[in-house]
Length: 58
Image (tube, rainbow, N blue to C red; front, side, top):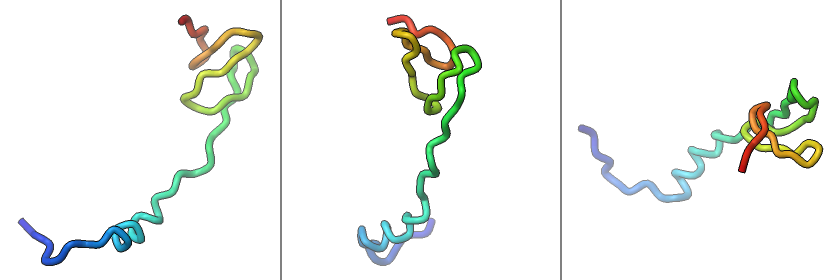
């Protein structure tokens, strides 16, 4: 198994990882309520909270 000879500095490690960026957030239009919202986020419509097109019960 390969072992590094020297410790890779945090700066060098982070320089390599700069290419992993989040893309712009995707906005979805709910077919049930017609409300636009972010993916994987609950949203409010007419005083009720919805998630994945279904009424979210607390």
